[in-house]
Image (cartoon, rainbow, N blue to C red; front, side, top):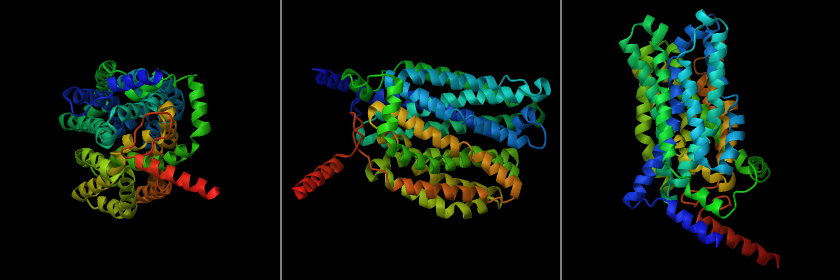
Length: 467
């Protein structure tokens, strides 16, 4: 009886993409998932684009830019803790409730940065307050991204998970681009003095209405059909702590694989998106406006290609997309970084090509990573694996790049750092199981039907040989 009830629950909640109602529900799921990701990355985009103003306001002195990069990196310190807390809770009580809390915390902390006193007014308390808010953002983000990706993956049809999941990453670049564009518009409309005194605050304040819109969209959705199915089968039992113990005890292999892939993913991500504005302005010598323009053009090009690569992965598989991206970045990172140093037009070409090489990874995150874990530990598995690797390698990438380039004068170091991360990603990718088209339902690690059939045949052959 429980199985029939669960089956009915899944059928009632799962959207049919071939019907108007199903299409509408998928659009709502995409919006509810992507808006939180967009808000999170809007904050990162604004912070990166206003780095020089934040340095002037909060970290005056010779080590100012390091302080600003530390303010960026420190938000990642509590991301693993956030994943360890929010993930198991999301696996126990549902994805929707946790996502409502995280989007409010992220947008509220971002907006508060816009009203902080500067170092000239509050002294050492100014950078302390800024870093505190960045820590709150990091703790909240520890549950936001893993939950949003899980939510989207569990709503998407199996055969189109790459296509629909790519819109979550579209939200990533939309938020980052919106932050960059907002700062660029203000730079064009305000004087340098106005930007340094009050103009930089405006983009941060706009995060609050974005968060409220996201909260409304998420409140209109039911929890995912995949989670509801297990909940009605009484498979979601115990405490959040028991979910965490189950994950660490029984699913360490996908944790390690995902950890290695995320190192490659997020060293590229935070080098290209978060560190690049400062690199173009401070290292290559472009003006504030020119540097912001280069990044914005690259982001728009990546946004245009994300749905294409997401859909393509549904037919070709996730692994081929990742192989092409990792190999391409490894081979071309050095020449493209050299090219960016040759002037404004060359910087645009180099950055756009690097961004397009990175997109096959970014476009398939929401299709690849949630499918590495079964439903009862999916949120926690994604959140913890992703955030520990991001905190250790991704979020620190701007700080490491800035420190090495500033200390040695080696402008091509970001390319070498990116190449090393790609090597780690390729090693992990070799152990990844392809899950394109696999169902996410149930308590077993997802696998494609043909892979399950081959495994069953192999088991029968082994049993026959054993006799």
